[in-house]
Image (cartoon, rainbow, N blue to C red; front, side, top):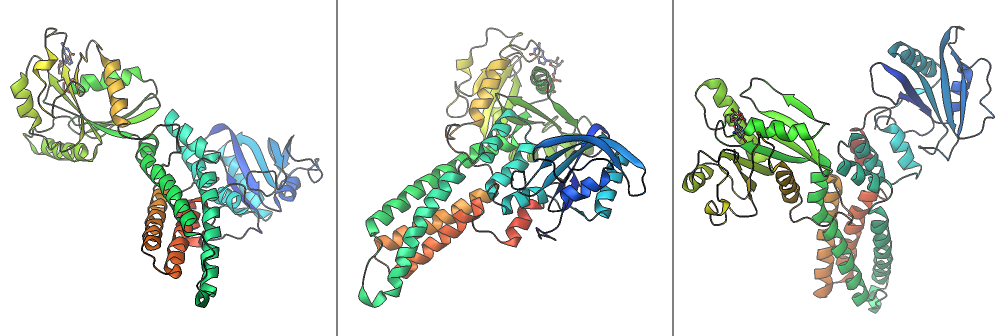
Length: 463
Ligand code: GDP
């Protein structure tokens, strides 16, 4: 972070760029009140109480009227950042915003760095680091699942449990380090059985959090899904049918019709990113071949594959032959027999084939008549959540947390192994210190400027 001083007053626009009915300019720091107070001619904010709203006219230094605004006052420590905070709600014209910003900066405020408000909240102990990160996730959430997850973490989530376990571990670490001071005398302050049992408890918790990462990631970033199949199988029709059911879709059609089409939609709070790999394998000309290559790549990187075929076209033997042409590996696969309206007597069991085509991954439907679409959606959610723990448990969705958990797990496992093989206390103490360091990085009890810089630079300005 370029400027992590807490002594100055920062200012930034908190609302998105562009015109809007209203915009909010936020100030935080010791001079917030005087700076805004000076912009009012006939108001005195200096003695105003915290958590009050004030309507008035803002003037420039030269006496020109800027805007009629409402300001909200938050006195330290009862504010988002823990400092004196003023939020100016002005009219959302970029001209007014720029003028107010310039006037505040002219009066001594400094333009805030990305994430600086939230970083100050962290530095003043208003939230821990994982909660600060959850603020960014909350703002970026685009599905109910992602929103719930971020909200839960922002309100504490797994931080409390990690802090508690870390405290207990610190006590043992100090006892073992104390033993080292008495190394001549062969004393044991830290009960080895208690220590082992604590480490086992922590490892269990860490592993359950690590297991939740897959679900957390699915909830946060969505499930990348590819629709594949022969031309005219009904891929586009199915895509349109699914998308029609979801009102809040963003469809992003890139390039020619032979390119891939990406769309987003939510089912049961899970976000799916659907890649329509139009024209896969039918490369006749160059443009199409580029499209096909890209499609295959998309398919490889997707975590769920919907293979769709025309039920009037392929018999069971041909279906297996077709499927074997794709590099499916151990992909999560749903096989869809489409156009059932034209072939209502199809017997699904005749298509089942070993591990590849089973009752639980074979779906019959009609994309055009919207027959069986809810069942497909149910199956998609089921596949997305396959093998991941229940949603009521603590869930991590941040790769930084995952990486720190992995490090602490390794160190604790090492400590446990060393304890069991009777290796001297100083090695155990070192393993535990490493684990404490990694756990502390999650909640921010251990931080470095580099770490803070990395986390907050991805925030946008005004957060
Ligand atoms: P794609 O090439 O795989 O994207 O296939 P399309 O979605 O373009 O569909 C090819 C043709 O099949 C179109 O004429 C669709 O109207 C038709 N089609 C798609 N789904 C169904 C279905 O469920 N029943 C019937 N009868 N026709 C369908």
